[in-house]
Length: 488
Image: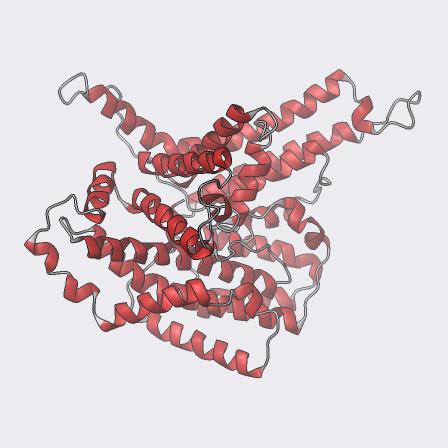
């Protein structure tokens, strides 16, 4: 089910809110869990079993981990915490439970997300040594479950933090299932850690102010998707779908895609945060004006914050972070970004995208900004945005040859075809141009949703209601446009 659809806005969401607020508090999590499973299984009910399996495994592993910590401590060492006096066998059981959780989640993620990629890559490599030969033959393709990258990371954060003693065990299975399946952020984030909502699962407030701010987030996020992301996506689709385009068209197309993916994903995050507020939950910010960044390091402190922090805390720091020497630090940065790219999708394009970001992050750490320090902030922003645009080409292009061809068009290395000139009147029509420049203005000079909604008044709420009605009206004239991160 898609947030930007009439089914969700006028049927599913009203039903959720009605049931949630008429039910006693003790039944609300159960209702939310069931409704979230309906939301997730709307397109393919079979995938419900996959999420339920992941939930059951981590719930049981969590109980095992907690059971070893709750064992009586040695009477000879009453002042020591239980973790310090655990027997070797207890530590092994705890570690085994954590390993079962990690291996189970990563195996499910690996099979469903990377099986096809692995087979295609092996066969492509084999074809280099034989004419049309396939090393591995399979008679099926594995379908990618929606949101599996997000809810597996969420669920793993629970067992990891529980193992480290950072959170308390969740003994109520319904509450834990509600955390994993909560529909606002289930399919495309933000990646909510258990530690961020553990207290809210036990108790949270419901106020008119919180609900109103939630609706504001919902309306502004829908506006980002419908009014900006979708039109900019049309520009990008035409540019990337046409061979031999002029230099100006190529840059126009990739900048449009940069706006599309930002407003599409931040729009979804806004809607998720808003829906959470309407249900009493407070989710963390996921975007912080990333295109004003003056370096790629700063970009990753502003873009997809929940993923950035997850990779930092659960991968970069455990690998050693910057504590193991200079070259190890560079290697850790590159490794994390390569895996981060692969997390986004099963394609060598995503690996290259992540690798490029990793190389630039390492270079920025190596040189510490030397050589750029004297540049004005505007120049740093322009240079950083230019690097981001180049990497977005690999993110957007369907294949590696298509990405290289588009980069060639951006730098005038591809002959311009007559057919390519035919798309100019289409992508430069007034509607697309107004949308494009409006997106640019909001990106660099606008106020973030997070800040703009802190203080709401009658004028703001009237504008929000008007934006919501316009966005809903335009949905009737647009093609089906699922959010970009649904495929990740």
